[in-house]
Length: 278
Image 1 (cartoon, rainbow, N blue to C red):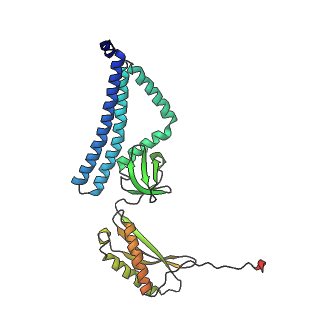
Image 2 (cartoon, rainbow, N blue to C red):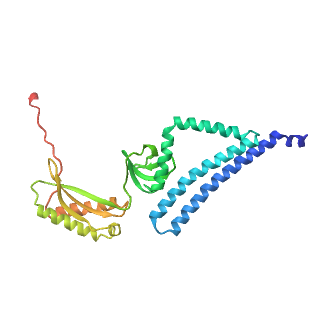
Image 3 (spheres, rainbow, N blue to C red):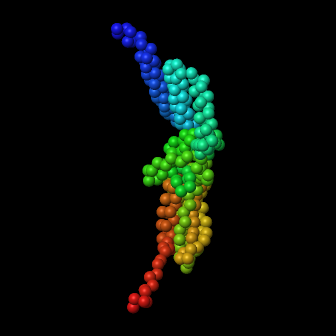
């Protein structure tokens, strides 16, 4: 009786299906493990961080594709175990795919956009980008979407088809720009001396010296507002290092202006009493 039960075709098929599921899970786990190991090996063996970032981007995108292929192969194999003719299924899948392609143009656009991003190396994992009103660090790139972590820790999923205008803040090089406001009657000879002194001081600062690609520049007067004249100091930096350089430039510029006796202007408001209440 026990032998008859274990020789049942239904039980044998169930065991085969269980084995297929187990192998699919093992393959999925193996792909993820292999990608992690390759990413760590890239970090250890390749000195160029830009090349490492690009290769890791391809690895993570390939991981998503591999998972999809594993699921498809497992599904087709399961159909064969159940003695379902794959030919009509594939034909039906083709018709369904055609219908979906006609009705899901957005999804297709997302995939095409993802392929273009990877092929053109528009940005990579670790880059800081701005898409519309969202700015953050790229944590993950799949063929369909990019996962963006903003400064407040929120994770934004942005479909590639929605990326019409994209700004890469950490591509090749960056610029630290600091604008300050001084009064209209300020002595601009002192203002220029203060900005130049701040630029020289920043250039010798060991905390940012390695991040500077060029000596900081004091541009002086660049425009004005209703209540102040705007002056600028800036520096070309390594990608992603502009924020730390901006903080140092701003500190030194304010200190230098104070040393020269020039006050940083602040917007003022005039309160006009309501004469009707008198």
